[in-house]
Image (cartoon, rainbow, N blue to C red; front, side, top):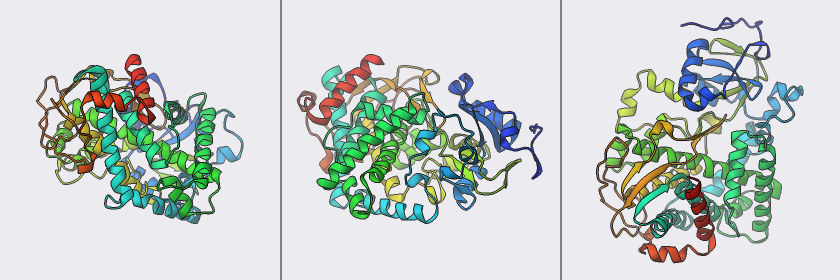
Length: 490
């Protein structure tokens, strides 16, 4: 393998700041990030020095090394205060990714401070994880009901046969509706909230202002629920840790909103895409009614988060062909690690009907997404995907898969839109058990039987016209207007 001249540098060798780096976020990366990862791997090995918006970063590419970084919290720290370049004032003042990392929240804490915050978070989330608890049962029913309502609105506005953008007109509004209910919002979060979360994660020029606006909205929600507690996550977080200030709770809600709307939303869209584009292993799981396995398989080939949160070396350590210096910034790449996993003889894992849980979409180690949150997100994704393939008799991509537009940023790689030509099941009203979606052509049409996953109470039982009447007020009314804008822009 051809290596970079600085490969296998001794402990006294050059540091990250003195290495020549190539920018990661280029037009080539936008079109073919997988090709860029492979080229970097063939040149540098498991770890490559890259430039990220003008700042040098170690990009970790291989599955084994990514796992090492994620699991060894004694060496790889999450607190941004460990970052040497930041501490020494060597970062550009307007570096767009810094705003999100400056938010003191559970994700960016270490050691006992992190364990305490995580335990409180898990305690607050647990009732919604349990499908047998009143909160969990009601939330699961609501997710299925919201999905059906959004599909009914499509039927009311576009007919039982037509065109839709399953990103803007289904996935994004669905996650907003779930967030509104879970967080106990007195008013709709609105389309602008999701856009601000995108702006922060994509590292655009207004990332700092967007982060501030989103934090402000969540802090106001925390104050509202402190004065009027309810059966919602915000109130339960206050109950779990009464010492939280409105600002602290707002920061926790902010990051939860990021994961629920953006990361979980990407997982919904990516799973739908892998089915629609004809991924054989994903479709096989779906045809067997294994929705959880369908999501796992899709996450392996198309993870919702391209690169996980930065880590910072606590001491000098060897990783790949390089010595990483104390205080260096490291970016573990899930997308590159998954490509490595699939390439190193793991096809038996991918083809297995048992499990594909080797994916790192939820992270790994002490900072892995908490189990209660993983279970809840998994329920949202499987329900959202399941309802589409129960209610749609036919769905076909209207663009070739390689021409779909992506948000290709330093953290996420999410679809901007997922345009389909669809046909709804005749007379469908929310119950889809055992329906078969007819086969299709060009690998882009759905053609698999799907078992029902919605709870019995989730059935809407209403036709398209009554759904249209329901859509005139409340959350669904706002989202209906959003969907109309999304259809026009798509």
